[in-house]
Image 1 (cartoon, helix red, strand yellow):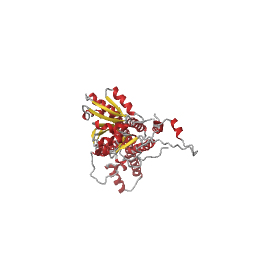
Image 2 (cartoon, helix red, strand yellow):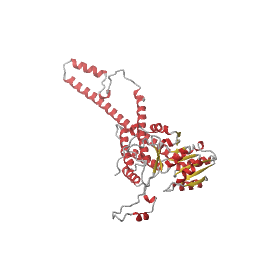
Image 3 (spheres, helix red, strand yellow):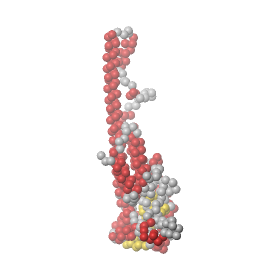
Image 4 (cartoon, helix red, strand yellow):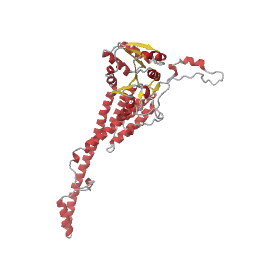
Length: 415
């Protein structure tokens, strides 16, 4: 049997040390971990769904606290909680509509009938006769033997019913876990296949002789652009280099290797080149409930340039990136500062120390944010696994994807 505590602890360490990056990979690994936890979880005969929900919530809060910026973790946890509630409701509905209610009692006060022994008409008549005559030794012996027989029969029935109820509860427990695991498997498959499902829509949005601008390195964007090329669309791609990590260079090499005409531009040249662009297509780190986008740093500048020149700004995002939180909520951490070494070499800091005061405090500070927030008014269209949507529709899409009871997982300080 797998040690789920060890698996959870190992996953928490990877999240804290940023050894797992990228919304898709993080979401898939989170779903696989929760599937393992559910399969190993021992649940009681009563309130089975509640026990599973409590176990997943407890683990989910730890995962969210380990890396609050990776919003896909909380999204997957909320989705799994929604799956548990839906499967439990489905089983309850099936039980209510089952053959157990095919015979309806006419007695409105017939409640908890199983708590009382059922006596036959002969036993009732014999009891009445014995009550009218003086007790004798033979009568007492007959009553004692009859009571023992009735008690033994009633006990046998009660034992049989208890065993049946226990068996039914165990069967329902196994069925709930089985159904939840099957649905989580479907969730994992959907996360793994989100690129393909989004890429299938490329031909509807990219046309001949267009110029597409993008920034950052997104696998979804790569598959989307290449899918349009496979449909015989001829177009060019402008790639902003995405300093300081220069992920645009990686993206450009990938596109060239797959036969796409690609031009690399500096981030500062976006406004200078945007007038030649027909469409901006970018990926997202997360999509908030108001339709805003958490995206790689620099994309807000691209969105402003696109709006200024009336260029459509299209965001590609899998369903697992839809976050049911608003950017102004205190439990939502929108950004993180990366290492200054991505901007400057460590050796350069030695010349920036204030030696005159003797405190050794640096005169130079380096800010290296990882993400931008793009407000919904700058987004023209979202393309998800299940089609294109306007920013105003994202709240409804998110509301259908999660349970209202699980929308907020409180962020606790990481230990």
